[in-house]
Amino acid sequence: MDTIFSLPLFILACCQAFFTLLHLVPGLGLPVSQTLRSLRRNTASRAVIYTVAAALGLLSASSLYELSKGADKIRSGNLRGEVMATVDYLRVQVSCALSLSNLLILLLNLVLSSERCSLDFTQKNLAAMQRQVKGLQAEYERVTAASKAQGADNAGGGGGGNTRLAVEEAAALKKTVDRLIAEKQQLQSSADDAEKAAQSAEARVTAMVAQIKGFDKEFDRLLDENKALKARVQQLQQPAASSSLFGGLMGGPAATGGAGGKKDD
Image 1: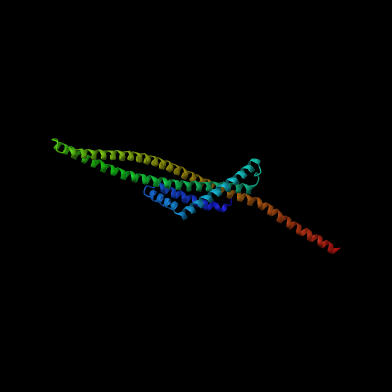
Image 2: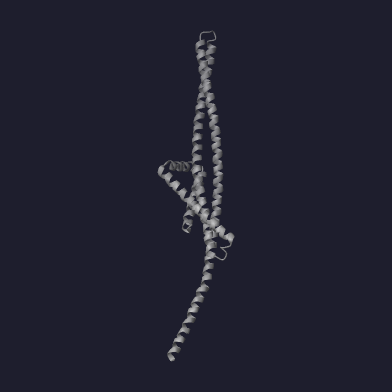
């Protein structure tokens, strides 16, 4: 793969790692996740994201293929003594690492944004359900207290019908409260699962950021090694150029001398 992609891939990896870190910021994580989710819902933005992911996948596949060919040459010993071939193999390693890192971080950002938005939606629904349950519980307590008071007032037998209606209404409210409590428990379990998934995604993000830092150090090391190999190639080429220039200078006077001898004859 051409080394012209190395610098753009490195810049893209840094930008994606920055957006991944924004997911972990308490005040900015949710807006960033919502923005990415809205971009995924837009047709044009989704096409751009899928195109970038496909391009990164193709670059990764190409780099892996070139790495496999270079590994075969190393096992067979064909790269020994070939400085430029070794430099190209190092460049392919850097390109492969950057391509795979960009692809993984892109997918991780998409998954993390979806999980954060789902967790926020579940928490909001759970809070609304809790408020509704509290209101129903208060209404149930009010109706129960009213029925008890009316039953005490009408203990002589005049208010039996009203007491029965109040009890039936209280029973209906109790069923509704029980149903809402069960739904609340289900939403709570869903929120716990979503929170665990978000924590797992944050752990993966942290590991990926650490891996990107390692790739950055490896990239710098490979650049230094590339510069050293280029300097070595230049040093190897200078003696050859000097010897060819010296041979040309020696051949010139000999030819001139031969021509002069023929003229004297």
